[in-house]
Length: 220
Image (cartoon, rainbow, N blue to C red; front, side, top):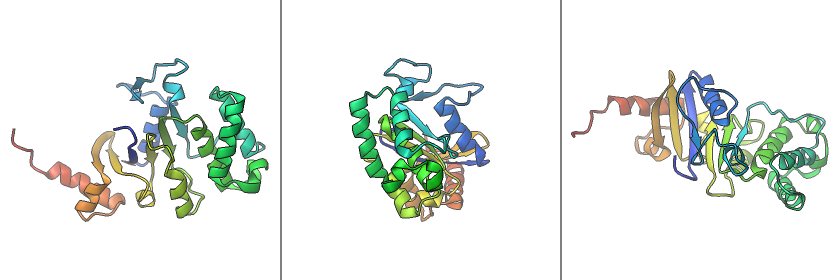
């Protein structure tokens, strides 16, 4: 994938896309093969290496409910090694970007799932990652706000979204990949769906993958 790509990852069975993100995030280990993100192998644990250039947001947040969003963001900044003056600036900017308002200083458990999801996304973005892995992100938010937050301000961030609802990612992604029975059945631009008059949904993606496999091979 090129730098700055926005990839929608769908799979059959559905759990495979989430599992692949966990492998990419270093939370699960593959039996074979290699992983390279942001041009680095996962084994690179140097301060400027892989762990500082990749961020992951799970479908279920691990943020403690008694923390406020501001406290959770400062904790994320500390874990990322961001110095305090810079951390304060980034947290202030993130609170504004996430539109947390009065919820910023209240326990996330009082703000509901929308506040929790915003906070988890903000914590991932604080370290300014080059690759952002999102598993079913921001489902508690309305579609317009969800699209706003996932149109990331830094254009060179590569985004990978695992989703069971492909149509909801329209306007956010520019590529789509289909994992079928453990193999890549399709990796194409969203514009290829448009050119084939197919929608960005499960049926459309399956149809494009089937058409690609049915096409005759080009002459050598």
